[in-house]
Amino acid sequence: MATEQQPGREWSRPTAFYNHYVKWAVYLAIAVFLLWSVWNMRISLERVAAGWGAAVGLVQGMVPPEITTQFKNELLIEGLVESVAMSVIATIVGVILSIPVAFMAAENIAPKPVYWTGRGIITGSRALHELIIAIIAVKAVGIGALAGVIALSYKTIGFFAKLLAEEIEDIDTGQMEAVEATGASRIQTMLFGVVPQVMPRIVGLTIYRWDINIRHSTIVGIVGAGGIGATLLNSFDKYDYDFFLTIILAIIAIVMIGELISSYVRGRIQ
Image (cartoon, rainbow, N blue to C red; front, side):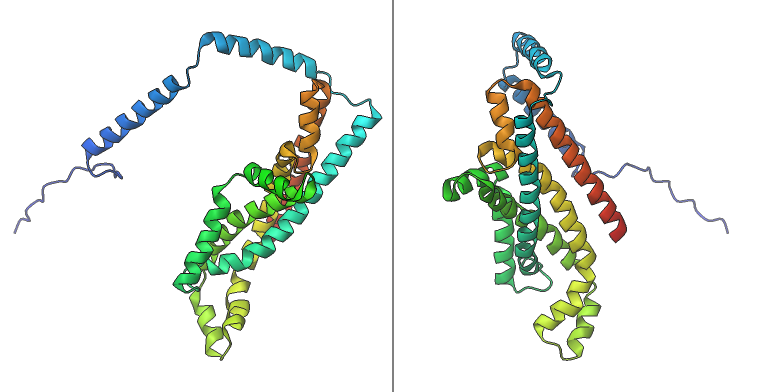
């Protein structure tokens, strides 16, 4: 008996849109928004040409970098050491504060009120840029490295706690239940059923955040929160462009060294 052939179905590429009309409407809206944004910026060719000439003059004033003055070299080294110290202290303080917040923000182990409290802390930390926090900290505790440490520690909480909370939510609950079955308390269950599973992630995120804090520590000094940023801004304000380039190159070198250390440690952990 001959089998009846089923009519072939035509393959179509999967799409996230409800239908083709919605897809093209979204594309059109994006295109219109992009054109409006370009128009709203009021970019003119005259302004671009003037800016290009100013940029050339700035680069000419930077070359060669200033490395001959002992006083400036001392300022450079002092600022870089302070930036690195700020990043280390801020990372340690931020991680210590982030770990309990991460446990609070993990939906699979925290009650709903605690969960939403933890998520609120993370959202509050992530909502503001570190420069805004640095300005507030400078007003609160004065100019110096302490303000920078406060700003970087505050931002570390939002970054570290969010990623760690997501890692906790993905743990193997069987290990946690096995610890509970032995009669362990809630804290013991967290210490022996959850922490061992996320410890590699904690170490990796700590190194990664330290790498980020090194870069950010060079920026918060612009508003008086310590580090090399203050020296960078002063050199620019005084039109000392050759020393400005020296500072930029030193910051790049420090960030690259931090990146190499971070990559090596993360590789060893993994």
